[in-house]
Image (tube, rainbow, N blue to C red):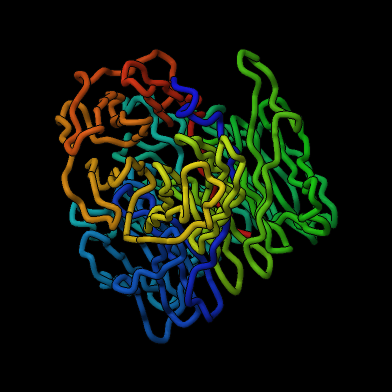
Length: 599
């Protein structure tokens, strides 16, 4: 690779928050869209409104849902379709379908009529929905191909329903596979639900329902530990209990421990969630995160301490884990979000994960008040921090460090850059009002983007030698719904909706580079000198010579297929188009088991 065009080493990563715009009333809850076609953040606010927000905190005006004389109690996105279920305090269940492109909903006000809906839970495959209300009614709903709900069956127990969690689907649907639930083989796996008294039932969509556990006190969380096939209950009295399914549907207790937290049961558990295999994190308004290693019957703590002292006096109140990225996000009473990265040494087989394996990244100030809930988005490493008075969307940025011809560009933070001439040492500063998540440079022009917008800046003055460069000025900006862009002379290359478009400096698309169906859509691109490289979703590498007006393929597509390698996260060609460097992500952990949490 040419020294003047060498790719940057691994880049530092930061999270930068922006507040969702236009929220003036109390926030009730929020939830990220899970389907690849619609990953917006749904936010329910006081006054019967649900708005949908993009990565940069902008409201999608055409998608707002409104109801008079009712308040939202819960939101739940379908894991396999762009469907959002909205629960209301008058018992109405609404389903909003993104495929319709409107703010219209389909409502059912009969099943839970007049009762506050307290629980919503989708089945893992997105074909069933469980809802529970304050009167003890539990309803199972079926979703048809058009996204419409219809009731399958109902179950009733005394007292408000507080939690629900699905049992993972059995690998076999034989009669033997149904022994642990005690039910005949059903189309869907069974689920557990609990009421306010701490009584837990197992039920399915065929009308079966059995009482299996009586804990005698309200729950803080109900979870399923798939690796052990255990049901895990955490009570408001700080009792952590594990139960094993027995033939005939009975449950036997395998562990029961009293947790120790500052303030005891009165302080309670304000948030909990699964981390890596068998590790359960809990927060309870302390300056620590407690992690309970259920696999090894051990525990450890992570301290809310950073080198800059930004978290001094803060206490942890909410928690969320990104399994694929191995990142833990924790919301604090001071309005900040702390992020830890899990780093297990490569080749350390069987090593027990402990506090030494977690490295805190730079914390961010997200809200003015406590961050009572944090949640990872389905796309682009986004975190939503939700408080009573607002919601912040925190986006991950890799701080750019690159050299193009005679100029080096270094990103200082999400909004600031320093450019330095490699010969003269002359420097210029670039400041943008856009939260930048990507950058590239060609000649005296700099391209910045954030996933919805792109800006082109230009070094001004007598550029050769760098000494007389007067500064940097913005010469164009345009809509760019992508996080994958590159630049060469007067051309901007961007991946959007599965296509690799070639645009001018104002974002006007001039042409599209073709890909065969067998190659898959492009997902990554990079430019070195006059060489463009792209990698597709199927791992196919394509290289073009872009020194002329029309890009010219330099070779047939080559497939990158290395056993055990994770997904490709970066590609970079050399200046001749004869070699490509490839960076892959470590294989993802299995998704954490389900958790049903309600503080």
